[in-house]
Length: 228
Image 1 (tube, rainbow, N blue to C red):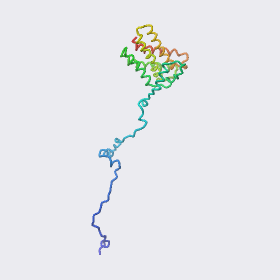
Image 2 (image 1 turned 180 degrees about the horizontal axis):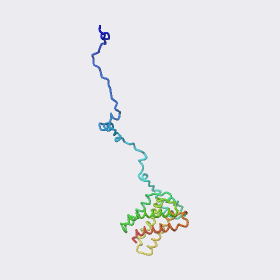
Image 3 (image 1 turned 45 degrees about the horizontal axis):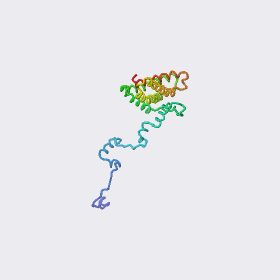
Image 4 (image 1 turned 90 degrees about the horizontal axis):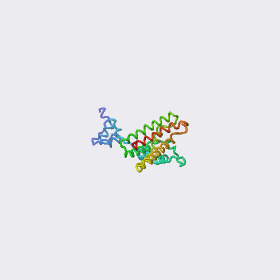
């Protein structure tokens, strides 16, 4: 008897079922099409990632642009009614500056000026920016604690009196004396609104040195409208 016959094991020559073997390639790859799988294998799967929507990204447009209409309306009232006896907290125009309100007012003044001369529109915006820069530098030299954004906002908002008198000048433009008085009152109104906010107690005896350039700036704004 041979060695192999001693350990003879009967063989079943029937059919052997192959085990159900599945390769786990990742649940995402099994479901993705060939192009997606190809990109993932090559390390470009990040191209297929979709970011979830952040609730903070779904803000209203005005909130996204940092535009507060109620705040702008309140500042307009503060500029148009600069008398302290009316009870408005006018310092909010200086202490809480914004850009969109003054820009809208300057653009409105520019649109009104189109009636006289179309070419002054871009010039008015330039004078607003660089005129405010001049007032800011002068205020800092004189010892004032103001920022350029504050000066830009106050000068822009204080153009409102000139916008108010513009329709009156169209109506009574033929009366030279009355028209001149309205122009002077509009300039004094605008200059007082701006100066009362920018010229604080820290200037002491130097207040006229800052009030006078502000007054000249609004005279120049008015000249761009009237064409003088």
